[in-house]
Length: 418
Image 1: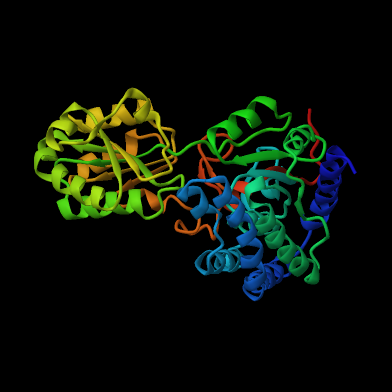
Image 2: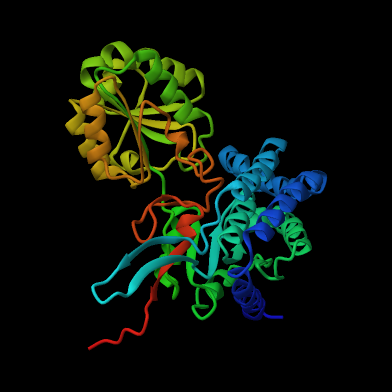
């Protein structure tokens, strides 16, 4: 079978399954999700065995520590995948929900009803947990899904998808609802992006190069999950210990993920007192600092930041630091260099907190909290299919509601248009 035929077969099966899945009752979907979660836990040994094949290849290729971290199916990650599926099962089913009804002057009762998008194509790199999150969210929202993971996670993805599919089918979910393209041939992505008769939307998750390629070549509408250039702004009234704790968490807890902080902005009035101590702690944690001239003056030995650093998504233990005059300069910096992902202000000034919330136009904006909370699970969505940095039709972490659309419905008693 050629690559094209293989991809087409998976997409056709997902399309056929989606028609049945759209009519499947919530009780059936929830039972399947719980069975899928149990399957992951029982299959832990198999998952880790297959994952080790990918990890061995990654180490042989010399992939970065951050990428290997994203690739690893640890017990914690497997537990999180299973927990995410259970969270999704516990959420209300959006399919069929009436979002509003109103009566027209002619007596016609009009409303809107939630329906699935249809078939969703997910193209992603290096994160086998995405396989479980995407499959669970698509199943609950009544969508078929076509998964195409990166070659670096091929064994892990096949193992996860196999367990999920087997469990789902035991509970009456139609075969093909969770489809995986199992070839590592790069042609598969090109073929997938041509299948606008079978796939309704494409969601790419990965590096900038992948997303640009998908956007430029796809015949199918694309929801971009672009890079995360996330900022933390330490305002002049910030609690110093809180600010230090937040930036340490935002930068060092998992530096290889899109909601990790990449740029620290510090109000000039607190920079001399707060920045040297905080920089020392960051350096102790292995963070390379790149700073503006004022940062370099306050923290000797910091590497000079160039313009590209303000645009950079490092996905590593590297942090750019700029001292700013005030909140206006901080907001202007974010507007110029940000990627509409996630920003946070640390402040005790209520007016500045409100300004930051109102004027910063990113998909997630926090006050006195780490950027790492920009996550579907942490925000109560159960899981996420990704974080959209475009505003049509979803913005920010995408959960069940973002995987549906609405159709108009009308109830009359013989009305005709004059």
